[in-house]
Image (cartoon, rainbow, N blue to C red; front, side):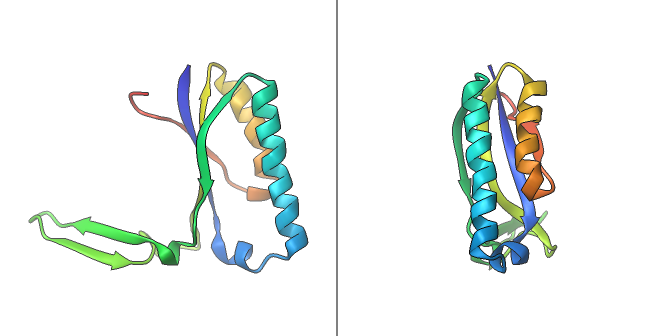
Length: 117
């Protein structure tokens, strides 16, 4: 089986300001995604919803080896990585088809093989 990461970039402000009903609808998409994975023989081996990027710490190393640590997101953009899944699958096309369930609410989904896995 090949290991893939399903990345969920999104606008954190939209999620923070979402109603409880909208959040429950979104969580429903994730439950449906998990159900489809299991039914179709894909194996979820990890994943998590991430805390807001303002809670991140970033370590940067300059060309001269100087290191700095800052609080906050890696990039100043509207979209940040909001969550991820780690999936083992023998059928990338079907995995992508399952990810369409997440796309109904997330907007953008990235599926990427894990190097060397």
